[in-house]
Image (cartoon, rainbow, N blue to C red; front, side):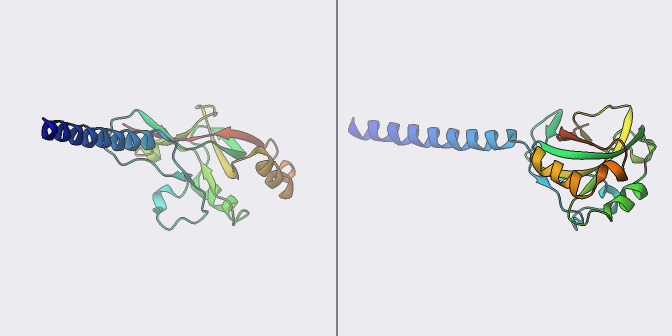
Length: 167
């Protein structure tokens, strides 16, 4: 009888441990993706240099979308959907060697495979923005340091997330 109880308890502990580890793994895949704000990301292909990269799960779980952690961006330029170019973005990137300059090309014909978009934007417009950090204070400091109001009329700070849209 004691042997059976010991085996039962051992099996129960093993099952609960396995369930706990699975729960931890599931919870981690629900956490927002960590931003990679490096201006020259060597792992990024030339096709996606315009994106603000972030870590997303590779766990084969079906999702509609996956979001990055929240951050502040400084919107420098905007225009009708698909009117801004990656060349425009690359020129602006030269002004910010320490901060990633990114843009939204989601839904543009030349970028059929594009699957990254952003929250807190008007889907009818494209934008070019510079990563401002994880606090409004940091973004505002960057805004003032580079006198962005004068260089980019209409520039504004916006809280957003990058969104990987699964197709």
